[in-house]
Image 1: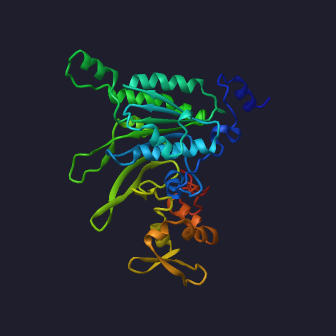
Image 2: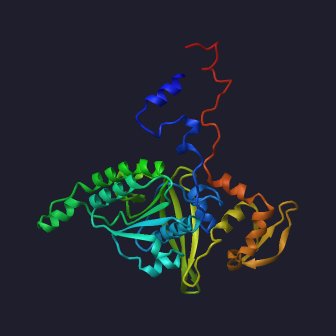
Length: 355
């Protein structure tokens, strides 16, 4: 018996396996949404998407955080017909019609109301312990930022006004406990959170809840927004996904997603800026756009207005006939190249340079 076989046999942990055979390090299952640039923000690839682990959607109020969570949950339920959504709710701001807007059958959603961090921790860890890896479950918490601690509630009931120092510790413990389960059970968890502004000369948005949620997360988005106007009328918003942390995407990447009052999320929004930067689309005159023949450099007529670049027929030939997908991967995805270069010219390496 080899030393490897001996160590594997002696392990008390049943999941112990040789690394190249471990299911935890195989290619992760990714669930694409119908919005290519949301997939890019999650994985760096238009064909990628949501994978197991903790994804935090943070931002001020009315910044589409719950909507992004339901967009991904709907895509997960659509891909896996036997899947269910475990929805922990502390805000109660999402009626059934809101779920249905994103194609979610509410019969496949288990709604669990929560009032404090400790009850969430006990219930969530209990659920994760019973779930098997073959079970298809997606978890949404709406929201972490609005949850009190048990001590905070008890102090209110006892009419005490002392400061609560336990909430950050409780949140850190929660995510420290659940993070291993999410990978081992192959479960995506989407946590809606709030942000606050750092004090200083150049304040920046900080994810609330302390360092525990930041260290545990696989992905952290900080969402911003800007108005879209037709004349003086606001017709919708561009929500900007700022990738604060990611296992797959270059951090500090910015992805705009357009949402209109009439049509909801514009599926092909965010692509135009990338295509212009890569030379796949040109702007021959103000307000007009057209595709570019990558072989000849000539403009492909007809030219169209910006609203027409949000249609599938504009993007289909670009995805089909060019290397646009590869360009996006190189622009956004963290490279898989060798992290430590073996430099033959390094004076600290080689037999002639003994230390």
